[in-house]
Image 1 (cartoon, rainbow over the protein chains, first blue to last red):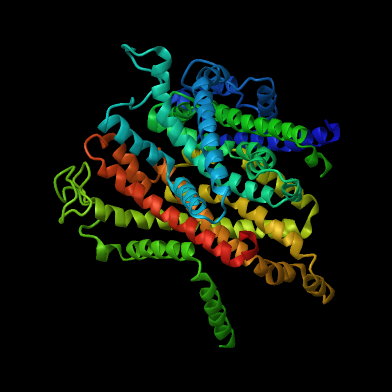
Image 2: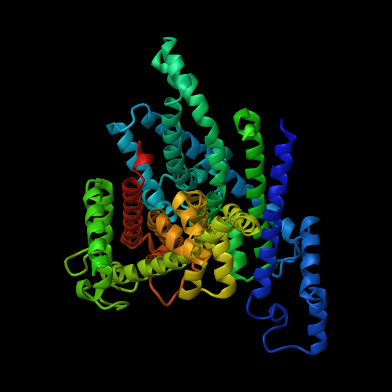
Amino acid sequence: MNYNYLAKRTLQIIPVVLGILVMSFLMIQLAPGDVVFMFIGESGADPEFEAQIRKRLGLDKSVLEQLILYLKGVLTGDLGKSFVMNESVSKIIWDRALPTIILMSSSIIFGAVFGILIGVYAATKPYSLRDNVSMVIALFLYSLPNFWLGQMLIIVFSVNWGILPVSGMESMILGDKSFLMDRLTHLLLPTITLGSTLGAFVMRFVRASMIEALGQDYILTAKSKGLSDGKIFFKHALKNALLPVVTYIGLRLGYMLSGAVVIESVFGWPGLGLLMLDALFERDYPLIMGLFIVISLSVTIITFIIDILYTYLDPRIRLK
Amino acid sequence: MIKILKNINKFKNFWKIFKQNKIGVVGLIILLIFIVLAIFAPLFATFPPLTTGAGEAFLNPSFKHLLGTDNLGRDLYSELLYGARITLLVSFIAVITSTVVGVFLGAIAGYYGGIVDSLLMRITEMFLVIPPIFLALVLVAIFGANIINIIIVISILSWPQTSRLVRAEILSLKERPYCKAAIASGASDFKIIFSELVPNTMTTIIVNMSLTQATAILIESALSFLGFGDSSMVSWGLMLNNAQEFFRQSWYMVFFPGIGIFLVVLSLNLFGEGLNDVFNPRRKK
């Protein structure tokens, strides 16, 4: 492991993290209207009560002081208290994180498997019919608005055929289905919807990466050694072509979480996306900012870990 | 006059190569159909926009109502045509503003390097990790869901990508002899950047615009669908938001606006990739 690289990458993410925090702070500062009125109503209460609320929210201090207090809070894991629910923001987020983690994981697995299989299949014969058809499928999938795909799937599978649940994460009455089966049937459509966009991008990426790997010198060496096409393809080219896919999926995490907000809304999936929408409709600023920070920082940290792992798995990168 | 003739010639040459690219041409044709339909919506529409009770509610497609009617008896076909105006216009203006900002900042960063460049790169990296819809939702919810804010938000989300692309091109272009010659001749930085370097990144910019508009349409639709669009302007996303409650009664209300979004996004992606193949033939093989 190269510690210089690790140190360099760590230094690089600090300004990004600070930037995200400052940005979220500024957004609330710039928001039109005074937050205090959310507590006392527009008509205004007696000035003493207003001052009291202001003090409790820390609004009596200067903007810079507020920023420093805010950064301190976030760095110690304190994201403030929700305006609407009488609970700390970090607890609310923590309680709702699991459904989103489940949905994201299943979608990533689905998208990666589906994308890699078709991508590799297309790369076996570049510019052939199978390649062209695969690429058209990819193009169609990433041109689809995914929430619409979700709605259409609900109409076909849940409303018309009635074989899958319309929304939510679990049934009220379990009936004769097992607990796991119930959860899985609820998970199926959201996973396909969210995973297919990722699958489309992975497909194109794997295809390009495979074709590039097949053009390398070591493939020529393998050929001259008399190895079979299958062995060259799967053992030599595939191994090298698949590594960058991990980084690529990491880069698409932000987009996937974007998609998750919309998909959770379509399927009534009780995760962070739905929580975000509720917070937005109720103008629960601490919760909105908390979610914004937690989500953005999670992506930053996961991308960072993937990056470090990648240099560990592929020594060539360290030299750059 | 000579300049115009030169440009016509340039266009003819471009068209000669572009028309061989089948996917690009298909994309362009679909796109043009939608643009014509949107511009001349009053000519093609069978009912004025937002006419409630043009027919009964939830009618199936017929000769009178080509795509059926919605929950308020509005003619879906006519609504769709007028909706295309909003969807296309919002995304187009957003692409223009984000391109102007992105090209300007990217060119400055690429040319001067140093602190300006690192600062810009850190900002664009920040945008890589922030989920776009989250940022868009937060901004629209805080500052108000109107058409101007939506355009601004989509521009904010789109410029970093343009900026990175232009910066990378300027970095390599400024090492070319013609740029060195311009510097030696004493041209001002402003002139070198905007009349020597930026015009040479035009092909990248145009391809990027077409792909950015595809994304812009998806973002606008998602925002409207989630209920954070401009409720006074019926875009395709808003039609889908409205359809959400009624898809048990009529699947047409969901199906057609979605197909509209899909076809326009697809055509922009096809057109963009076609252009890319024409402008950067090396990339293809």
